Length: 436
Image (tube, rainbow, N blue to C red; front, side, top):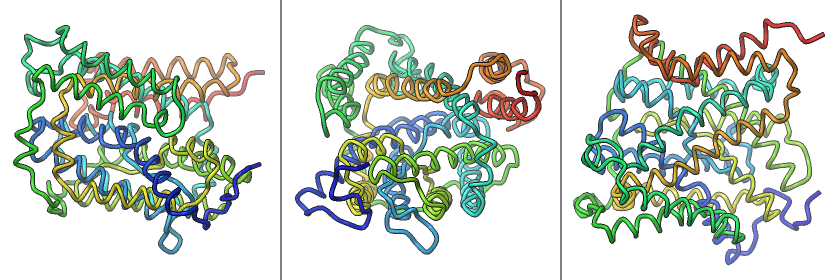
């Protein structure tokens, strides 16, 4: 039961209250939204801080805003018309980084477009698929995503590789770790010892603190900022279109899991802000918006978009259900996406700064998976499913040569940690009998 007078999504607080609330939604998801693009760009071999990476960052901001407008303003059946913020999910990073590294961004982004279209049509019958993804499955998949990404965070915190900014000889230096740990310390202190907007934007403020420390160490290169354009030049299909069945299958599989998560976020939003369950139309509309946002973003070089769970927490904390507040946040993101100078500043962030931030973010992804698994009754059957699924997913990721004779993108799929964990978990959950 809500205590707010703004429990109706169609109501709007006074503008002096609505604008700061909208900015708070942006601050809470900003770092998590742009980080996947930085990682996938690095996996694809794009120059760190180069114009191509800056472009991908711009698309992450721009189409997070566009997808949020699909969600809050709506377009026919599209959109829950609830205060749901959209952004690029870490769930897609493992698969897309692997595809981009082995097949190129053309295959990866083309798979995003097709998966987005499929995701869109899921809106018509998403309620009938929820039984395939109980907390056991979704918790396992999210846990696998977090565990897969944690080594990436450590690598970045230690300075990355010679193919990025730092020389291999300085990898793991005290300077790099000092910068990375400053981000972690500032983020944790602000998260747990402050409240409101400061607490919700703790990771972003931590990144700014680490950035400033790196600046004093002479680690920041502002040349890309000076050379960046003032207005984004949108490029349809910047890397062309290249169909690959394995890549489409992998991204679509993650999209289905993401769709189930969006159903949960939609229900959590209405429960936290209005004290009621989400309607079927709201659930379907939210799924349509996910898919449409993903497909449109993919056309212009953006990664898949889905609902952001951390913003659900803001609705619960403030009690303000106004969708127009989040619409203001969407407009801020679109403005940022249209200004390449902003993307260039983000791209100038040294890897140890990013590493400190993603140590926290990726750890929280794993923790979110554990939290979902805590709802599961740990019977012998369920423990076997957890054991075998994680062993298959993480094991193949750690020893990729075990499937070296599997061709092309299918090998990438098998070693992505996420896909094999999901496939094995779903299969075992359907096949194994319940404990007697």
